[in-house]
Length: 255
Ligand SMILES: [Zn+2]
Image (cartoon, rainbow, N blue to C red; front, top):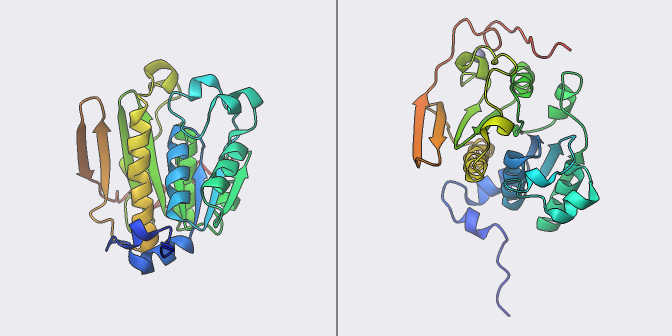
């Protein structure tokens, strides 16, 4: 009989991960905020990588219009109208039965975000709105929690890892969220389905780097346009007057 190959052998053989890195991944817990296109990618990649505890938070039901890009869901899910977080958890348990998976059918907001991130090693932004991202930023900076920002619109996307105390935070780079309704949405601008797969893959790679203890310096915002096949990373710096990470004003945590 052939020898049993460790399920993570294709990761542990990579020098950047190795057995020690895989053990850190196994010992880690990751919160995924949102279970749409980005959250589908994070969930797949992190569960398959063996993150020991995956917690997914989302309050939506699957819709037919999601199927173009949200790779966790299918037509049966749309017909059954089970909450996305529950479907996701059930699918992840089939993908990797050795990890703990929680699917929470709730919306992350100012009342529960600090409880949701408690005990987690890392937070993945898979939200589709600025309100939630600034909320994650406040909660994570306040609690010294690493998180990985990601966003997609049209054919473009952006991502940036945030390590409180080391990297700039979201508000160092984008001091204020745009006025509601002032920026394009997925409804008005669309989302090319390869964009969230790519941004989600970059975010998940940053997550593995954080979990294994690799350096992410210099801290960068990565911008991409899938249609143009263009990638650009720009170094980001801490802002001395940042209301969040420097002045400690957590304005988005207030209900
Ligand atoms: Zn800041």
